[in-house]
Amino acid sequence: MVSGVLGSGGSGERQKLSLQDVAELIRAGGCPRVLVMVGAGISTPSGIPDFRSPGSGWYSNLQQYDIPYPEAIFELPFFFHNPKPFLALAKKLYPGHYRPNVIHYFLRLLHDKGLLLRLYTQNIDGLERASGIPASKLVEAHGSFASATCTVCRRTSPGENFWADVLVDRVPRCSVCTGIVKPDIVFFGEPLPQRFLLHVVDFPMADVLLILGTSLQVEPFASLSEAVRNSVPRVLINRDAVGPLAWCPRSRDVVQLGDLVHSVEKLVELLGWTEEMKDLLQRETGKAGC
Ligand code: OAD
Ligand code: ZN
Image 1 (tube, helix red, strand yellow):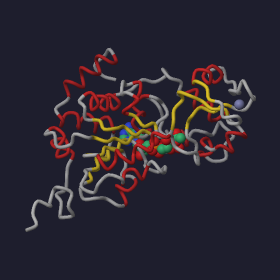
Image 2 (cartoon, rainbow, N blue to C red; image 1 turned 180 degrees about the vertical axis):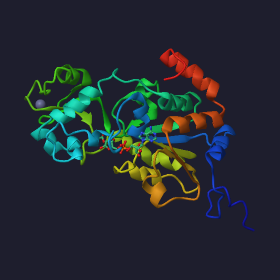
Image 3 (spheres, rainbow, N blue to C red; image 1 turned 90 degrees about the horizontal axis):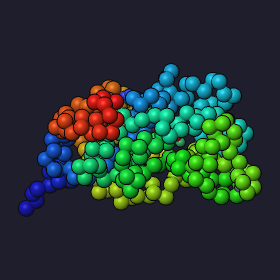
Image 4 (cartoon, rainbow, N blue to C red; image 1 turned 90 degrees about the vertical axis):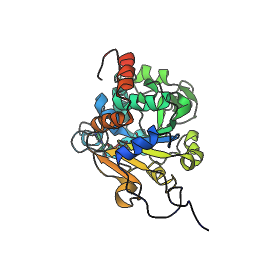
């Protein structure tokens, strides 16, 4: 006698889910391991442009640099030819210039409640760390400014040395061999940090996947969205439908289109966390909204 297959990971017909359904599942304790993937869209409410939004994204605003095409800013051959465009972008992201926003603090609340399995971020602005999420819960898939490496002798140095030069518009040079020093940000074609390998254990374990503020255009990060089990609800919160959730949707996908802050506030409300969110924001920012 075959029984109990539907709803437990089998391949039968499944009911379409809404954001409310997912919130209720989480509230009821049905999703104790929440996995999160984020991109530059979550930092736009902090005032940091994303990359690909037409008009406002970094890639639309590089005209002042002599750069052949936008992605060259993250390519090693161009960096060796002219590191200044990347260093100018880095200077804008100097820690402390920007503060985490309500979306980062929503993720922090997930962690405080013991629900955050891991947060995979493509962002290099450090705002996930700044929101108080511990390093053990983070995978900074495209690296960070916390350390830097000489592009010639591979000597590593703390990020502070790099900032001392960048803040006065000087190209950072290695004290040993005078090679250009590059912060440990992953450029196109470079390997991702070792911690990215955690995806091998995290994604099969997840009970729900939240995807926030990314165009899912950059690999291998984008394909992580397909690494959760088929039975696992995937919730995309973004301005547009993107990646595998747009061109190869699954029956338990939830696509919440529109402004991220608005959608996250709605999710917080559906979860019944509005008061706790307010308290957290007040504690962390000293004011009710941010
Ligand atoms: P993108 O700029 O490609 O995508 C950001 C997504 O967020 C887009 O789909 C936007 O529509 C959406 N978005 C932005 N602001 C929003 C808002 N307020 N409300 C709702 N949606 C919003 O950024 P990423 O996907 O993060 O590489 O880009 C991936 C990688 O490409 C980056 O990590 C970067 C770049 O090359 C490195 O930094 C090494
Ligand atoms: Zn060196």
